[in-house]
Image (cartoon, rainbow, N blue to C red; front, side, top):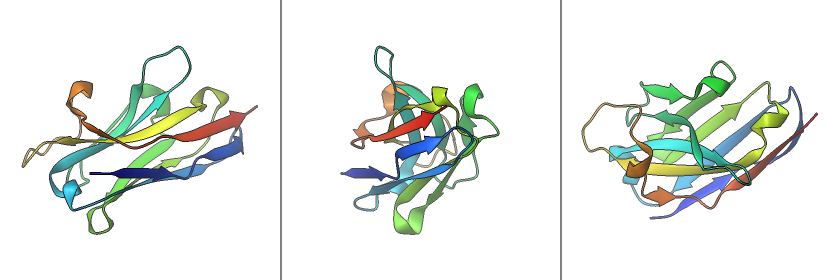
Length: 126
């Protein structure tokens, strides 16, 4: 299983970016998908997650109303649309998957994520 994240870059505060994460194989059909982010000296924290069907989502409070997570199971891809970006959003963003089988949940505990992408850098300048 491989996850390939892309779409990071440098953007000014208030701008937008769209991250994509393409998965190999048909693993998305039974997996919650999520985006995490990590900054130097801090733990990797979840940003958003989406259920298998895409109808249930979770967002950390700091991104609610600004970020939107979505998925296209036919393309084995999950997206993170980021708008109104702030300098504090600067981080390396990682996509990850957690097997949930037939559970209709949009959030699972961090320790259930067992496949990770390579990370993509997002830098927001002030």
